[in-house]
Image (cartoon, rainbow, N blue to C red; front, side, top):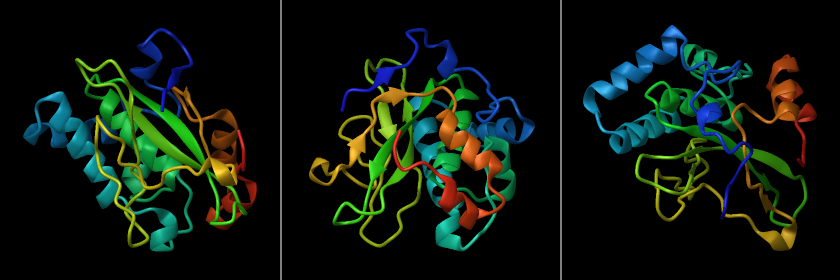
Length: 200
């Protein structure tokens, strides 16, 4: 899938933002800890990916009702849905000077019912000409096997156009504004499930 930069300048994908707060002490500390054992960009990006995917459970999987949306809060509280976990991953990448973006898929049930917008991250590693999408949601339910990859994508789900699933090509520096407003306004996860958009 060909990703489209919303801005031609790479600077927004390196910058600190309201959600991607890469300069927060918690983000910096986590980045330094990971970098201590993974000095080069590729191994750091892979280790940070595995940390967010595996050490921070998706709140639906763990039954956590809290809603996080800022990277530092995801790290502090150890929980988040796909969007929040993608924000945390992007912040960890940017904290080490690696361009990172946020992007989305539209997924649905087997018959195309109950569409949801699924949050992903994308990374642009040194020497690479193309952004590589990454899915840090977590490998649940059984059979899901998302892996870090800069070649062939290893996402949790491949979209099915025949049931109106979509890979959205836009790269965001901060979460899609509609998604971000829903995250910020949610009092708990059940509230969030009622207010998240089903299309972009």
